[in-house]
Image (cartoon, rainbow over all chains, first blue to last red; front, side):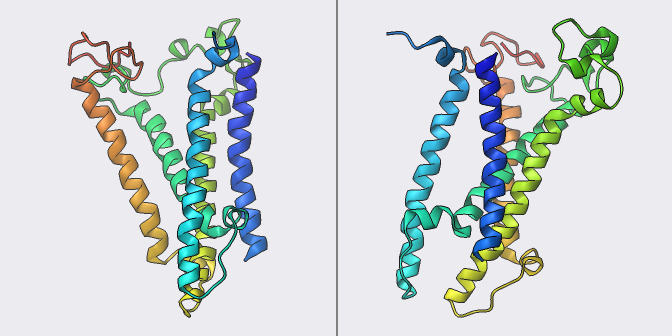
Length: 30
Length: 226
């Protein structure tokens, strides 16, 4: 089950990370 | 040559991860070309690929599609609890609509030794875990939609200024047709796709797909995936 846990973390963490990055960039760069 | 075991066991995820990354890369490359055409036409300097993928123009295109996809699955997961469709493999059997019993859901004292820890206890942890999929899909939908509105306001303001018009604030952008047009054109296509999936799979089949009924299953059979 270890690779499933890695996949879960990559997908969930990656999705939130990209969205948070978008917020930060939109606020900083405007 | 055989693929390693971890590749075979995670093939579905790896396949979609691969085509997702390829599509995002394609979106970035074609997006910057389109963006720079408008820049040059307005007498402005073209931007690099790095500048483009960290711009609000790229972020709004990304997030408007994300929010609608997560909304689609959120509604799909939640609506299929309560609504059924006779003959559809996507539907539960007609008499199973609703939350189902603790026994059917294997929670509390009905949980097995392999059940997740939060399915074995009563109280807030069971409540949270019982809705964890919609909670997470819903939070990603709301965050994506918020990102679309924020980056959309910035990108729209940049376009406005490029056309020598006034920029808009975030609350003003929420009332702009640009925001609602981007939002609703994505929603309508998602809703149609789910409707098609639910209805077409009553009569049509794909041999071997768990999303389809078995090829020989009767049209009237509901909620049986092969």
